Every structure is written in C-alpha cells, then in structure tokens.
Image 1 (spheres, helix red, strand yellow):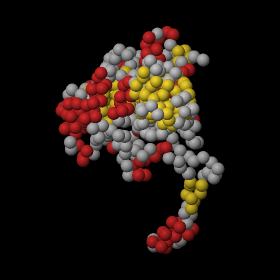
Image 2: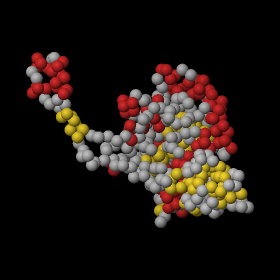
Image 3: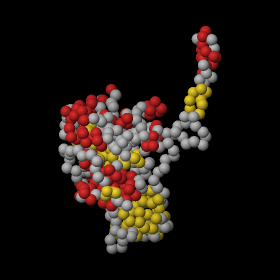
Image 4: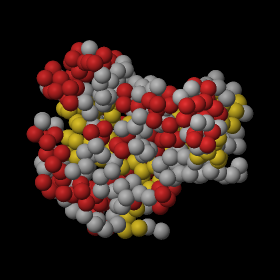
Length: 443
C-alpha cells in the first residue's frame, strides 16, 4: 500500500536548488560506498578535534584520496571539527585547518567559536558550518551565525518543522538537519554522563553512550540521624560511620522486570521528505559515522531514491513500501520522527530489550561480472555457503533475491562455503550485477 504525503508547512529555499543528501563515513571505504550509493556530500572525522574518537577516522592522505574520489562523482567532503576545545586542544589547530584546506575539504562542521574564528582567518577556502552542538533552535540565532560569516547552520535535533519554516522565511542561510539515525537523550548531544561514569569527555570525542546502558533503580532507605545518635556523638567520625552503615538501598523493581534505560528511539523521516523539502531544509543529514558499510549503503540508497522521486513529480509522489522494507534491513532501533512533528514523550524511549528489525549481514561485495557467463566475482565479507538465501542490491533501487547454487574459488575449484574474510570467490547470479553492488543474507 502506498501513502501519498501532503506537506503541512511551506518555507523558502534560498541557496540550494535541491536538498543535499549528506552521509556519514567513519573510514575511507565507507566514504566510497556512501558516494557510490547516492550521497551528494559526506562528513568524516580527522584524527583530531572531532566527536567520534572511536571511529577509524581519516589521515590527511586518506582525506585527499576521499576528496578525489568524491569529486569524480560531483560530491563534497566535510570534516567534523566539533569538539569544545580546552586550552591544551588549541595548540596545532591552525596547522590542522590549513592542511584541511590544502587537501581539498569543502567545509568543516564546528561548534567552538574559537575554532570558527581561527578557520575563517587561516583557511578561508573552507566553509564553516555551525554544528548541531550549538543547539540552534530559533531564527535569531540563525541570523547571528549568518552575520558571523557562516553560510550554513546545523540545527538542534529539537527543532520542529514549523520552526524551520520560520527560520527560512526570515534568514537567507543554508539549513542542515538530521533526518535519520540515533538520537541523544541529552539536549543536542551536550551530555556529561560519560564524563562522570567513565572519565571520557563526550564533548571531546569520548562518549561511552551511557544512555544505552541498562540500569536498576533504587531509593535510599536513610535512617534519621537524630534517632541513631546524640548531637555530640554525631560530631564524632564513628557516629557518622554508624549513620552510613544504616543506609540501605530499596529496589524499585522486581527481579523479572526489564532494566530501566534512557535509550531514545532512532530518528527516521522517510515518510516526511515532502515536508522537509517544502520548509526549505537544504541538507538532509544521516547520522552514523560508527555504523557499518551495509547501514550506510542501504540508508543512503533509499533516501536517494525518495528525494529524486519527489523532485521529479511532487504532485504524484508516494512513499513506496519497498523503501520502508529496505530501510528496515539496516540495523536500526525502533524509530520515530523526533521533534519534527510533535515533541516526543515517554513512548519514544526504549525501556525494554530493543525490538530490532530483522537483521541482515553484509555477505559479499561484487568485484566483477561476466555478462556472457552470468558469473560474478564476489569478495567475501561474511560467511555464506551453498544453499544460502541471499539478496543483491545496488544504487538506484537495484534488487533481487536468489539462492547460492555453486561457489568456486578463483582457480575454478568448487567450494561448499566461502569461509575466509575478503576471499574472492565466483558464483552464478540470477541477474546482471556491477562493481560495488552488495550481497547480504539473513543472520
């Protein structure tokens, strides 16, 4: 069943003729997949000054290669430089920013005003995009950053469609907004739970995702100090120790209950692209620099098709069921629309064990295809064997299913299983495939 969507709000588009699809990339391979599957731009992290220190991140040499690859497809590369810098972080920032300009980076995503000012001064060829970490949620703040020379602002995730429409009606600046991916339980991601629990600074790239942990809830059963000891005795350390010993923890749960969590549902706006386009969002940002190649390729592929479909024929645009089905094959949590339509409530958090979509594994990457024989060369990315039900998919909605009937190694020897990581094998495929097409299987 298809659903026709009518935009509720309308705004103005000042800068980009059509919305940019902005993809995450935690390493060079992910960058190439993101671009190949339809991203107009990719945001990455360098080895300093970003908020994803656990991602592989990019050396300057990898950045240069990524920029060259992206430029072949007409795409751009942005670098997240969005820490809140401490004094010791400032040393070296000028040289770092100059190097980004040298390797061809189009823009940096920045939160700290000191880094913004430095970038504008020492690397004028690199655009400064103000990060979501600045919690931009009103048109006056958008106007402020425009006057500071920023051509683009990344909105707070807490911003509604109605608020975006007003921003675009008042301020001539590019608006970037997250439309898909994980949501932080804290305001605009500015959280310090990780700092307190693990001494890892969330705002300097060390978040341990404390909100995804499981918690038990207790209340303290504190005895009355006056009932335990006299006032004179309370002044003695031994009396205070007696008070501490009297503290008990009273559980607020039963053993069979699920653990409490602060875990937010993921954002997914695939059903509301017309509204986002019509209010004037210039860049559609997908979260997930730590996510897998399969996730990046699948999600970007779907949004690419949906955006192009709407722009080609807005009046007859429908959300296709196969887009939703495909999106669910990426490893997502339950999803909602974040703050765009209405404020989330208690139902928009995950309190029970996560009910994930049916998971799939990235099983292989197509390296070559012989049209005469119908045989593809596959680079193994996950164990698969004869008899495995598989799916092939590629850019622009290419998709088909089949069963693995035969596997050969590159010498022509028949195999019962492709068991070695990155092993090249050959197999008969039911339809033509191309380099960079992907093969997946159910877990």
